[in-house]
Amino acid sequence: MPNSALVAGATVTIGSRTGTTSAAGLFSIEQVPAGDVTVSVSAAGYQTATQTATVTAGQTKTLLIRLQ
Image (tube, rainbow, N blue to C red; front, side, top):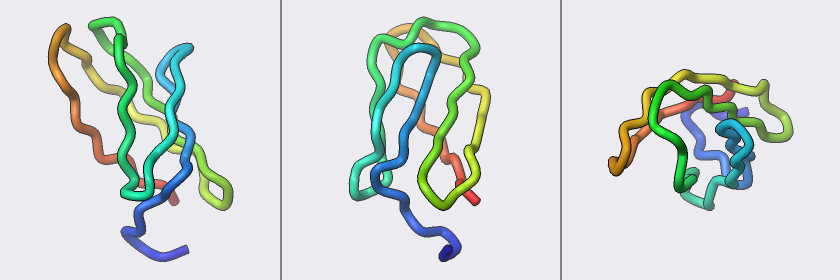
């Protein structure tokens, strides 16, 4: 697996909400309740990565999550 490669088609989970990363490795999940959340990202051939983030109502949150 290459270092710093973007992963298209990875599954992103926040609580009961899920999304899939684009060809650019980006994702968007809307209407996530404000507060601390756990973000999990999984893709074939990689270990699942988990990160905690704080969501603020009405704002966009940018995360950099590395899969290994």
